[in-house]
Amino acid sequence: LDLAFGAKPILVGEERNMEPLTATCEAAGMSILDPESASKVTHAGFVVAFPCEDSQSQKAAERILEKYNPSAIIATEKLGPNAKGVIHGITGYDVTAQHAKIQYLISEAKKKAILTIGIGDGGNEIGCGLIADEVRKIQPYGEVCQCPCKSGIATVVPTDVLVIGAISNWGAYGIEACVASLTENPVVLHDQETERRMLEACVNKGAVDGTGLGQVLYVDGTTAEVQRALITMMKMI
Image 1 (cartoon, rainbow, N blue to C red):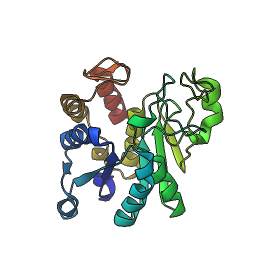
Image 2: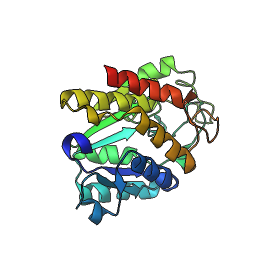
Image 3: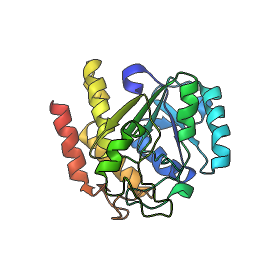
Image 4: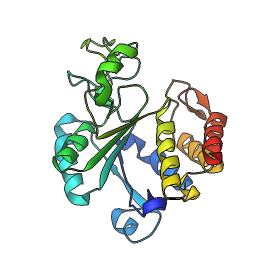
């Protein structure tokens, strides 16, 4: 979005993720600065920590939208609550306490007619409320989860647009490829060397693989070589 349109990215997430998020952006060639400095230079953005406490999240969402007036909210693999308000991991366990309540950003954005986009892979991510019935049918814990709520992992939070990938990163890369094509600017889609730098920087700052393999160069159980190969194929197309 920066390379294609000159947009100023604001990255929002849990406090614990700010360091790996910053390192990943810097590895991709984007400086992460304070908001004032970022507004004055190109290829720069900033990060904002969002609370995990439900009681604080609504006000935090209101403050962010009021202060920055974004053109769009894009949620990439950010987990959303089910019909009972419980947030689940893909294996059906309650992870509500550990995750930022980004659903309030989405609901506040809708009030202000701000575009919302969700990117997910398992049906428990924000945006997948558009396909909640299908998630309940398809996913092993879609209908009945492994936590006491017994109401399944399917989130009920929709977005204006939903992009599904086998891995959420890949859904985001698909958007990159489309924007690169639409703007006739191939640089918009990062190359395989940038992908390697991003993954290494993220892991070196403490990020772990989503399938429980630990602090290794994997993404949802697939190797760094797979990520680089995917980017190579997209670039060739």
